[in-house]
Image (tube, rainbow, N blue to C red; front, side, top):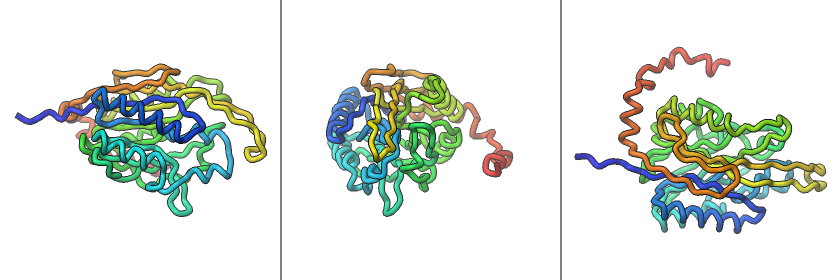
Length: 295
């Protein structure tokens, strides 16, 4: 009788301060909490080392970017992954020569970096001014064969695009992880949280793959200065991190304003059989989808 491929995943929801060491220490404690709950693959929010600096435009913030092996969070969590024998996708600001990316380093349970995913879709909206800091990723939608299963990673704005999840599914992802930094929309004056969740629930259901999304919480304010053109603004990050099953149903959910560790267990072989049974990949018609790349 074959052994079940059960895996426990976790989404960490946290508030970020202006102190890198403090944020890494807090993330460390929450990751340890998740591991104590049995989690084997643990997701932290997008760019958790700092407050969301893309709210303003400052040239000196380019200096936050570091090569992968020099990044403080990557170095720290590589050691922790090995210690706890867990997998951690670590979101960070990457410098590769003269190029700057919004990236995730996927660290396996032995502490080795399996590779990088670089954010494909870069937003440029009021107070989400990422095009000032990042160029579009060049990795494609990679998947990573970890100790506990094959995973795919998309970063924040990527989660709004069905092509991200479908490409990851076609590349063999058994679980999809979305590190996120999203909150209030001061100009639009809308609550995007339900819409945000429904997008990913749809991706999960359409690909018959569990989705794990980890967001930050808290209000982050911009202090006016010469470097940012005396900008005054604030964002309130709405948390609401969640985990779906393979049908898109939210099975674990966080609040809008509390630091939380969510966990859920999946039998990856059972999920695979459900995916086969629905016939969604059997009945695809790629020859009919050329309009997606032509327009």
